[in-house]
Length: 260
Image: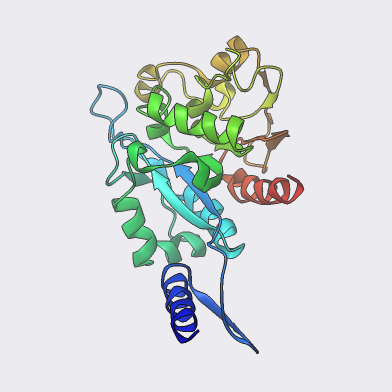
């Protein structure tokens, strides 16, 4: 009997070591592992083959990240190549952005993003495609990331979300029946009306997000005002137009997860 008791104690200690423990009146109790959300980001340092610097949009990452972590979720970052990613569009007058710039744990995560072969779709409740010009390159065509996202969506009933140019990441996603995941759904992203089509950066874009969504039978919706928190929620597909929508998209993901 002593051996059984000692074995149980050892097992409990091991569980606590890996997952953490809470205390109650009867002693330590193993806590549930934290639920996770996967942020999809780009390694692209330049717009296509040009020498124009590209980056991931810092605010679009930070504002969503803050909502998720405040709700108790753990966040992993994945990029096509893994490792460090370029960040930009930083506004240090935004107190939240400034705080995360000096958060070593957060910044280390951006320097050590996971590669697709390190990711298991079943570990996550949702994916969030970050924006910025870099999002147009590397991510949309990455078949390994596509496979992860569609397994999460179809087999594990997870949520697909994207913000601004991050919507480029979903244009090639297809369900097992061969249709685009956004076919027949309301979808949002950075619209053509706000792109500077005469600019050199835009000439490097492999496609127009708005037109590709339409070609895949998606119903592309957008706010002509812009920067007003516009988003679209259609089932388990949630998309936002620009940085002002990042926190709202994150909140809608949390609300949807509660309903699943």
